Length: 541
Image: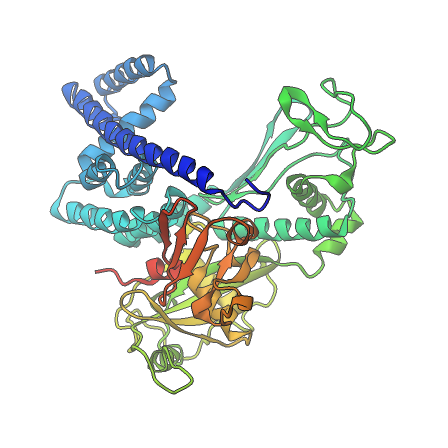
């Protein structure tokens, strides 16, 4: 194999044979996993055991079955309980998803996402509750058959929230009241700093820290000494958590190992210790990017380093939020802009127009000068003139009440409206009833093609990748030197890793007129990646 990842014919034949065999084994494994869940469901029925049952007998019965399963699997009781819960929910509430697993259409990872995100819909067996579960299951399986579990989760969360939208605001208010900061001690002089806070704030904090760290790393800034400094990282995850975790060992500790100057060496438990200078000090200029984020996070809170302050100047935390016109409850001039966008949707240089749009959406880019502080509040957000109304606009009718933080999932409408009011930039999108993006109108001018691609793609277009567009390259699907035009039909966002793979390996990529990317592997297998906007904007039946 050459350094640019092009395979010989012999290599391709060997890889193709191995992948073909693996696909057969994977299909068999999924069928077996579905059968295991059915068998566990029968075991639960045999003892009338309900996971999480409140009565003393039910609790003891479940614990007994859990221990029986754990010993049979040679796994922990936590693993056994998770499997039993999945079996119970899938068999009782989501049988179509269980059947899809047995048919090899989805994986166990997909099924766990379907059941866990659909858990709020499993309460009650009335006609309305059953109808909501079936509708959720049908819609989420359409996405599960095409996307990875990682990409499926925020979509599943939105679909479940749509079926119980009346309580989403209450759920967020209750969860936000529990926000807190916790300090947990760890080994080797380290600690975890855990902040539980709203997801919008968590994602904005992480984005700002990550971009300051990248700027610092490029400049080769010191950012403070690792020895004697606390380590931590900021991670915006599901549930709105910001987690500070130890990533390196402090120098000079009892587990420190000798190493040549400037060279990394194995630390405690096989973890690579940081590189050192000739004098034996930690070489902060060669820190891994995760450690740079840690130091930036620390310096921003403690004000310990001038280099971080310099790098942070002008860097705001950014999040991307999708908000439907129905959530904003605005009729004019917002609705008129949607109608105008729809009338000109798909317009080409020859003046021919495409389909009329039916659904209005905005994409908000919310920037903060600090944690939760809007940098340009109310100056360039959506227009506020016109009466508030719970009814849909003339352009969109009733419309879907979509409010979603990209990379996380649905937001409470009150939070979404706050983001809209404080956004420094926003796009007005017009989509048709099938969810296809038709046009983009922006009140803050930037290059039109980049606006369109950002609204359509939302993340890297490689199968399963969710790196957001602002950290991606805009790639010509057909290279410009090969005659590929600089047009939306030939451009897509790719993260740096997948961009390199596309150009320096045997993977081939084609783009269909609707923005779907068709990736063909070196062995000839095809993978279709549908634009994220088509999933998020598609009108629910």
